[in-house]
Image 1 (spheres, rainbow, N blue to C red):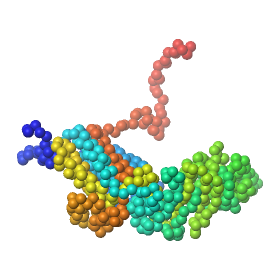
Image 2 (image 1 turned 90 degrees about the horizontal axis):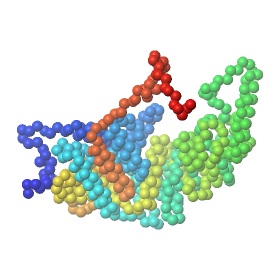
Image 3 (image 1 turned 60 degrees about the horizontal axis):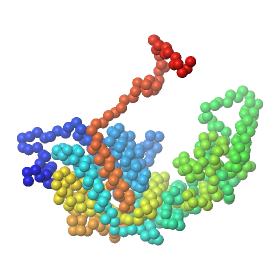
Image 4 (image 1 turned 60 degrees about the vertical axis):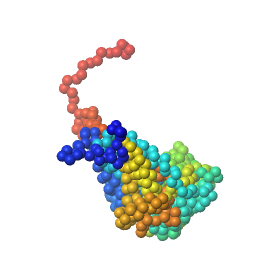
Length: 555
């Protein structure tokens, strides 16, 4: 009995210093872990108020001076300037989660921070770091193994996905969620393949300022915010598209070249030369069978008659992001000069669409693997449109996950509390380091519903006590609502199993990775790099190097 390992509840107490003893100071390796904990906690403090459907938003000022209002964790993390390598590593894991599943960046940051905080306590209690990593890995594996058993509902192959997408979209836009969810569900359902598969690229999203969200609609093909500038407003068949990131016309006044004119004849000759140059450039586009030119830049009125003469439809796009997306969809490069591309984009037809005060250009295809529908969003403010656009993309990603795995978990923190009970019950029975590690993992999971209750403005201690009692009684469907605990099945609050599993795995992996760090090393720039980056001219060497003997091979 004397050699028996301590129980889960007795290990931390046994490692605490006794009366009259000095507390154990962490070693050099633990110091680096503790600094990582502080960096993760600082990052979590920024993201915590934005977690959940009742989360608050941030007013971001970008490096270019633009002001953005957003509560999307991935956008906030992308805007932060981080110095600590552990914070950068955590941000990278959260952004990877957002790219793969469309959401969950806040969950990764908060859970990883809580896991590191509990690990810090175990390290200070005297648990060796190698044993802590092994026990944490076992707790993470047990969590992922228990997760599929908590799924209580699945989306049928012929079932309307509205109820499954509502809670996913409600996380990003609590206002008029039903209207937006209905449009997203209709677009995803219409874009499905015959075999039931779904590709997110088949559904596009276009935001047009003006009107109300109820004025949003679905258009066939890919709609891009922009206007047709010339008389040609449609290409009914066989559109060949070129994309330009330059002005459609002569060189702008801000160009580096400057024309020196000494007389009115020079001015007349300069204008005639500019007109001939534009006529030649537009003629080259027509010779390459280009009949649609999408421009991200100024469109000169004097150049439009040449485009109308050759039957070229000129579209002035509003954002570079849409130009990049068009380049990816059409498979044609974004040209920096007004020259025809070697491989123009092809689609069935292109036409102008008026939606109230907004204008859009619509591209339609007849082949698979191209956008089939576009959800055109309307709204009075740019910030509101940005939030609705992000919510729509999140709903599309959620439907893609459901097509791969239709199982759904209870949302509103119910799944986390169910895992808390499972890990706590098992941790109390385990002996050795795994006992306190399981309890620490359970305590970290408990922080997620606590954050939901805090952001909803509820009394956290009372709500968590009620949830704890309900889950202890076997009611695993109890979650956090607006006014207190709720039944997630009655309120239709769900999480996709795929996104939840990926988020838990990402948080556990980044926590385990940070626990393996024994030292933080900042590499210095080599003298060669510093010399190349120096703004001063290089000095000639006073003593040149000796002449090398010629190699026999070069004789």
